[in-house]
Length: 309
Image 1 (cartoon, one colour):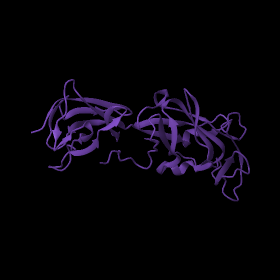
Image 2 (tube, rainbow, N blue to C red; image 1 turned 90 degrees about the vertical axis):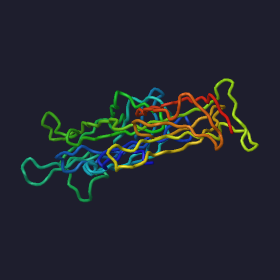
Image 3 (cartoon, rainbow, N blue to C red; image 1 turned 180 degrees about the vertical axis):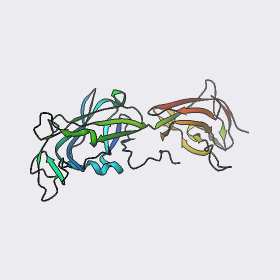
Image 4 (cartoon, rainbow, N blue to C red; image 1 turned 120 degrees about the horizontal axis):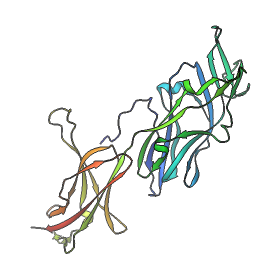
């Protein structure tokens, strides 16, 4: 089953996918750009961090030189599967060691280049630098990206984050007529789609026992949860619903089936048992459920009766 929205390459994604531990999340960040009239804009990133309640978490300390204009029609991966503790983070920070911008000459002849230094390593060979591009303290404190709702909350097994560097709004002449340009970044982070989880639990109601079938005692481990995705209303006539099975697994004495990375929407959740076992549950199956973005939806099934012919 394809659980991810079809997103264009210009939609920058930071997909957070679960690692094996329930206490951490894997985070990836892709960077895009809002298009503008600047001829060229290049920055070198040396460090990417998350600032949260527990302090700073380093996502990457690799040096990456990025052409921001190229991002207008593509997404550049900056972080891949960094493992971070789940929790609430208020800021995403990009530490920038240098950069340059190429703009049209006000006199109408050619272009002018402003760089953080004449020997900035991201300059094309042979480039003449016409002036200074000021980047105040961005190598030390970093560019601070305000996150949606003032926080990035990592509490489920997947998340998608848009990170947009607006070139047109991020570079301009320094006030005072010095002739220099200054970088005053406009970087935005906004959730565009959050995937959610569905967790099903299965237990016996008080006084209920499972039958013996073919001389074997039936256990809850022989039951399965089934996630039902309705066929699209605008799809071809006769398109079947999609069904995905997950076994119930004993997790510290609780029988759990976990469906991850689901798009928000309406689903059905069913329970199927081993051949030869008739049973009833509360809630009745299939149970209608609604998956919310960035959250886990839990349904607790109890078997109220079970028998075998």
